Length: 309
Image 1 (tube, helix red, strand yellow):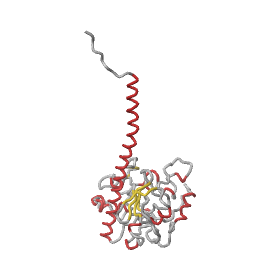
Image 2 (image 1 turned 90 degrees about the vertical axis):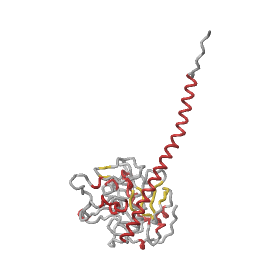
Image 3 (image 1 turned 30 degrees about the vertical axis):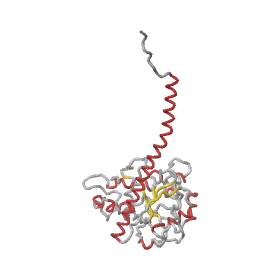
Image 4 (image 1 turned 180 degrees about the horizontal axis):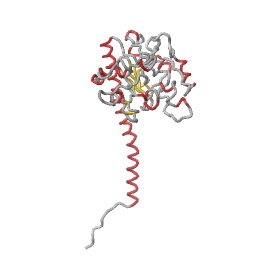
C-alpha cells in the first residue's frame, strides 16, 4: 500500500505568502499610526479643555484672569506662570499649597527633601504626542502656553534671527511699553491680569492658549514651574509649526535659542496645532491659516473681523 503524499508549500508559494503579508502590513501600519495620532490629538484637546475650565473657574473666584506670568525686574521678583496659579482648579490644590508665594517658585522643594516642587509631572500639561522625557534638568515639562497674541518680539543678539524679527510687521503692540497693560493678546508675562470685559473682540474669537514643544524653545524647556517659560510670551506673529527644533543648525532662525521664531505655537500633530479659545472651545488650526486672520484671532481688542476655522 502506497503512503499518502504530504502536502506542503513550495518555496515559490511561501515567498508569495510572505510578500502578501508584507503588503498588508504596509497598508495597515499607516492606518494604525493615524488612529494612534487621532487618539493622542483627542487627549490633547481634552487637556486644553481642562485648562479652559480652570481659567474660567479662576475668573469666577477672583473676577479676573490669571496673568500669563509674573516675570519682571530681577529673579527675586519672579512668582511663576499661569500654569502654577491655576493648580487649585485642576485638582492640584495640595501641590499649590506647598508653595511659598513670597518667594520665586523655581527652586522650592517639598518640605524636608531636596526634591523640586516643579519636578511634579502634571499629566494635563503635556500633550501625549510629545516624544521627549517628562523631566528636563529636574523639572517637569509642559506643552501648553498662554497667548500674548500679536505682541512684538525682540531679537537675541547671541542667536540672532533677522528673518524672524520681520514678523513684527504684523504686531499690534510693542515688545515693551511704559504702559504694562499695552499688549495685544489676553495674557502677558509682566504680571498684568486681564478682565473678561477687556476682551472686546469676543471670547469666541480670541485665542487663549496653544501648543508648544519642549525642545523647540529655550523658554519652554525650562518647565511648567518657570516664571519665564513662554506663557504670556508666545505669540500668533510666528506661523504655526515654524521650525526652531534644530539646535545644531547653522541658521539661528531654526535654533531654539532665538527669541523670535522660537516663541510661536508648535505641535507634533501633522499640519497644525490645537488651540484653546476664550469661550472654552478647543479647535485644531491648520498651519496654512491666513496670517492676518491668525493675528485677528490672537488680538483681544483690535476690532478686526476674525474667522475661526
